[in-house]
Length: 227
Length: 192
Image (cartoon, rainbow over the protein chains, first blue to last red):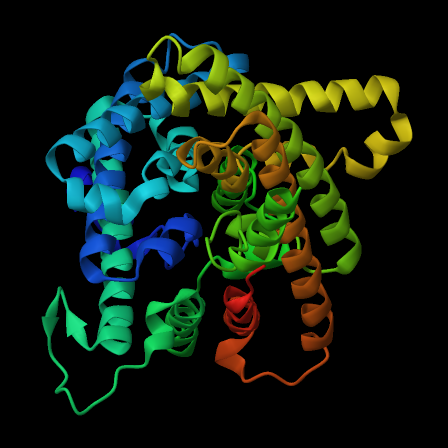
């Protein structure tokens, strides 16, 4: 397969950041109340991810190794601020719905994780494709979670009412506990059909919490595997 | 005084940072295997969030707001938090080795914990004064600790149980978190 298309496939299916790598759980749980919010959040993160991968890949030979993490954080934070201002100006309803979670894209594990694990070692075009693939994988997972929660919690999909009035929607799915339940259900289904997720690693090894350390460790695990 | 208590109860219980706002989920799931590390991380988080709320509130009210640099807040806050955690780590290592041994391993985990940045941004959004920011930071971190220690206690019991194969690992932990979240929803009726 073409190596650029391979990056897309890798991000969307093989190493789906949310469902397989279990990164970026905070926004997944928080904004999946409605499908349209999930889609908006996913696409905003995709935009940031593409540009952060591009910029970091371009400057990867200039930044000294010791200060690379602060440098990445500044790059990502600047891009997130630009995105936030653009959303505020052109999509005010999405801005109100996502609120606090737009600036929090900065601390999304996926972005720093990809910067550290991929963009800092690969040429710009491949990094852009990697960002696009990962971003679309994240968007797909968020939208899917949003669809399930909106259908069960509101009886609608993308705002169109599907269930007849006589069927009372299960309101708890639109509330915080529903987020935990739906994601638990997704992972349980993946487990059942035998797809290996990284969850054991995340839950058992105190991975994550620190994205950079997490990216390093996952990468080391991968290198160890190929040797 | 009454408003301060309201802020603490509101941030710690009613709008629990983990269970209703979904901030800091990674470490909530990652470090809640046993009770002891959960308490260790919780105390470190209380320490760091309280200090970072104070610092970011001062910076926002006396630097960003007067000069109309509101849009710089995300960049400034994340850098301040990263530097602050490093600073606290170095200070503790030098001045209080016992405390450093207890909290040290958790401090680097906190830099990218989204709860820290989340609290700083929420304080600004709500237009809190310096005192209110510190109190709300403290309350949020206490809520985080409560949720994490409770989950750790639940997980130490789950481990002995016979769980259906597909639910083993993350799903059962998330279901436990969902039930806790339902219980915490009860606090939303709480009003002083």
